[in-house]
Length: 157
Image (cartoon, rainbow, N blue to C red; front, side, top):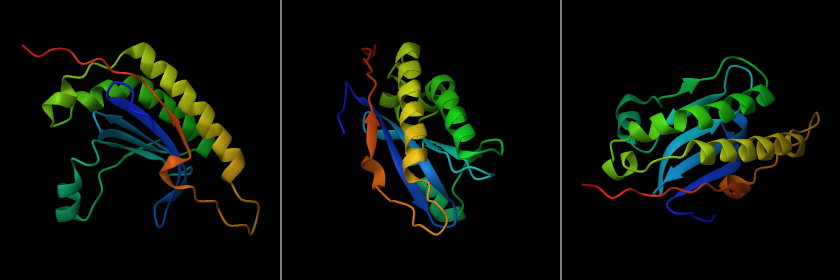
């Protein structure tokens, strides 16, 4: 994956036992994952905000915080994920407990472009990875494809 001025978007295929299977994406700012989008279809599609920061909570509670998408197809979840990236990535960055992440401005035009690239990649993944009856689902890990966006850090006072 290529890091562009401190920010990158990784798009990949996920197969998480007991949770779901489908295209996913992770938005990183300064190497910290601030938003993860899982397009698993049915009632399983969801997103995570600052998932690594909530790892301690998960360890103690045994529950991974998720914000669920409305029930729908994987393709509908892909569309929802594009919306969430465009509209809520800024909020995810602002909710980070890490000051340098909160100080990184995210440009709306970069997010819109990344969301469209992500939507295209995920839609292509759906046609490539969904199995016909009886076939195994391909697992390509987190490096199937990437879309990159840039971030320019502002000087702190």
